[in-house]
Each structure stands twice: as C-alpha cells, then as structure tokens.
Amino acid sequence: MKTKTLTVTTGSEAATVDLTSEAASFVAGLGDGLLNVFVPHATAGLAIFETGAGSDQDLIEHLGTLFPRDDRWQHIHGSAGHGADHVMPAIIAPSISIPVLDGALQLGTWQSIVLVDPNGDNPTRQVRLSFLTSD
Image (cartoon, rainbow, N blue to C red; front, side, top):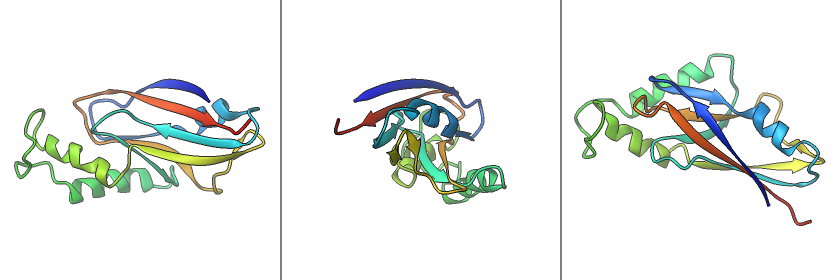
C-alpha cells in the first residue's frame, strides 16, 4: 500500500474542496488498484459529484436545510448548531473508494472527489490517500 496525507484548508465557513487533481497525481503511474480516500475527522465527509456547475453551493445550502444550525442538537460544544456537523458524516461518509486502471482514476466524465466540510470551527483538515494493489 502506498499512502499520502494531504493538509487541506477549508476556511471558517461551510465549504467543499475538489481533491480530484491531487488524487489523480497521487495514482499516476501506479498501475491498477483501488484508491481509498479518508478524512479522519468527526465533522467532515467525502463525496463524488459534479463541481463547478452550482452543485457545490447547492450541497452546502441543502445540508443547512437537512441539518439546521440551531439549538435542537444534543451535542452542544462549539459554535451554534455544531451538533449538526457531527451528524452529517452519517449521510456523507468519511471515506470513498475509486477504481484505478493503468494509473488513472476511473471517474465518470463529470465526477469529482470532494471534501465536504460544514464545520467552520476547524479550518484545517487532513485527508489520507491510500493506493491498494495486488502487486
């Protein structure tokens, strides 16, 4: 297994960060296998979707609808509504896997690997890339 950890700055507001180019560079020339992408944080997740056509902002806005930032949450430390950030990874998982053939990610034409971070309290995230092969 080959692994690499990325440090990603997401800022002080809910954000999405496209990781596709970093992932593609990581697997380039590695042959056939499986790329696992993992974010070791309780308030962030990973998704595969089209970026740059408004979907990024749609996702952030609708997460706010699904998980309102108010006082309904049992988990109460941090900023107002922070408990919502801890529930979100049950919907947007902290890991994804992508097939790799001949050193290239096998994503669809419009698919991107995206870090989803609703938590403005933690502006820096770690993302682990792990390439698995049977060789």
